[in-house]
Image (tube, rainbow, N blue to C red):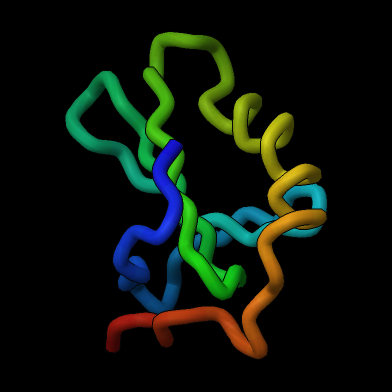
Length: 83
């Protein structure tokens, strides 16, 4: 987990995941890793998960509640989707 990463740019048709109060953009990096980046927090957070560990969003579900409690939400998702 890394905090304060650069905001992620995602395509307009991207499926964002809203989990326990935090909205995430996830994308595969190669065949063995999924990277999730928060898109609705004042400070973007990135979590890298090995794809082989069952459902890659399970760690996101576990971490989203404490993130929602401690990292303020931004007024709007950032950055705007790429066009």
